[in-house]
Length: 408
Image 1: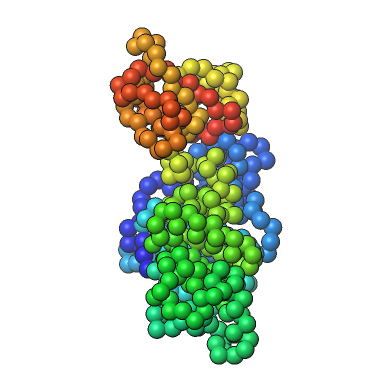
Image 2 (image 1 turned 45 degrees about the vertical axis):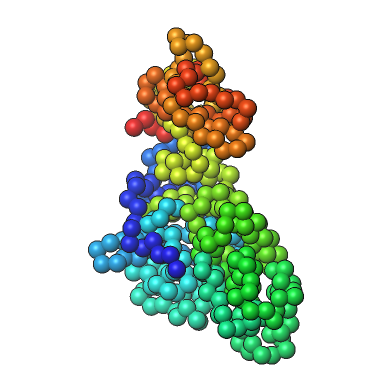
């Protein structure tokens, strides 16, 4: 199992609030955030918290969970609630503490402080911990960890109380059908493809009907095309069974595409948690903004009705929630490649020049260095080809509210 416990990322962390307050700079009525100190990063939209999430009953609760290894703290005051039937993904860079958190939920590690509860029962807290085999928790390893000497059906039945019973046979048959392997029960797992082995591992973890299913980088050992197909298939299976699940990944696309909620982990704590679209479009900190997608920060000065930038003036309503108190202030506006357009112009009319271009197949992402040194990324159709070194004007074309932060 991959373990990111001993390389904690030390990027600046701005934990969310747990006191019922509103994130600084958020619009009136924005939802409270979920842990730690008050964030000093204004941002459009809600600082999404567990309270703003699904309304089902809590199945998994982590409260102020800490994990220390000697003088090093791998997880620092992490709070998270996962509700019945939802898939929450812990997303973050290597060394941020997400895998350590998963291991503590599974019982493979014991928290130094804080409590972990499953289905209302405390399984870790006050220095005591319920053994892994006595927790109603299933775990799908990234290596799948199947038994090569057992058949597919025997692997699935392994975790059942009476694997040789008729009830167990019926359960295994149902799971084989669920994962699309109805005719594979008697085969050796060594004869299966990577995707098929993953389905067997998932079925084995689901067999005892756990309260919580944990998935540790479940797609990392698959090739790219199979990875995409399998994450959609796994999401379908989880939805059909209604199981509550927690996944761990550093793959942003994976997390955003299959999760009911995403918890972005940084430096051992949850920095933001919420609906994938909300977290991506309205990140509550620079770290979250930079980690998710291709982020650029456009310097701007706030006027009475407009914001002034090196690529033009725009209505200040574009930064919804800005407030009159910021007039005269300098801010950095979060812009994604699809928020910007580059247009070839004569040298004297240029805002900057193309310094790099990324070809993705259907599109180009052009890196434009502005005259003030700021680098922005602009998304264009693959038919719009600009040369490196070509002078361009840049236009902000976003038709939605943009996140912003005090200038550094």
